[in-house]
Amino acid sequence: MNRKRVDILGVQIDALTMPQALNKVEELARDRQAHYIVTPNPEFVMQALKDGHFREVVNNADLALADGVGILWAAKFLSIPLSRIAWWARIQAWAQLLIVGAGVVIYPKWLTSVIPERVTGVDMLWEISKLASVKGLSIFLLGAAPGVAYEVSRKLQLLYPRLQIAEVMAGPPYEPEEEVIHRIKQVKPHFIFLAFPATEQLRWMRQYTRELDRGVLMGIGGAFDFIVGATAINDPTKNSKAVRAPYFLQKRGLEWVWRYLTQPWRKERIKTATLEFMRTVLEYKLARR
Ligand code: UDP
Image (cartoon, rainbow, N blue to C red):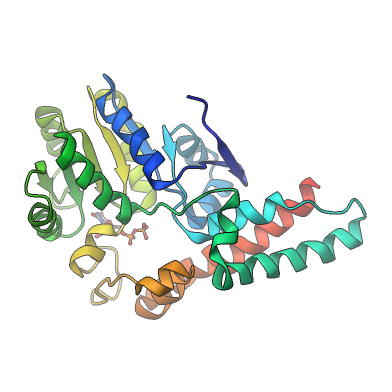
């Protein structure tokens, strides 16, 4: 199948809805070789601009799903043409930036004409677990503070009693990496969820996908923490429990505001993913005109 991909500052994103993404992940999980899928957000894109190696790993994924309204915003914004006259193009670009930005809150559906849906890691975890329980596929949960992934597995099992949970591990720094890889090779899960920071997820994917006989590795960042209200290991304050934004904020593309307020230690990262990202996309659009 030809992939319809959208380029956001050099990062290729698959333009798929959740059901289409699920069809594809099932196909990958049943394949005779292992695969990995990524969920780029604006922070990924900013990182990829600085680090060509990171970008290459993201672009070599078998699937790259838009995690973050910023990606939908950028796809839409970049799709609108600009005038050939430089000074006029600059005014146009700023106006488009503001109008598409307002669209995020006022009329989110408008943004979905280029990339049809935001498909987050945490939503994929639920949806893949449901799919796996129906289709008899197994999952492996890896990462977060000790006990967190286990609590997530109990929740999933309650919701999907037939779900095969092959293994649950905290992984580094609590369990050695070699032990984890050894266990993955033993139980041969169809899906391996990695709850690690983005750069670590990509390192695992790059390093181990080729070593495995089958299965889909997928990075989900802090998803386990959101599900059980836990604290991320890398939270420097050690006390902000992750709580997912209310649904109306998610739907209005304002999840980042919630994170800004509830996890103030992320402030700098959120600034990079919003203001800096928008500014960079604007300059890129003007430069490539
Ligand atoms: N984490 C981990 N091992 C580490 C560092 C972090 O398992 O050595 C976990 C952490 O507890 C959290 C996840 O990795 O559950 C990363 O979450 P974060 O919110 O930083 O993800 P991001 O925002 O980068 O997607």
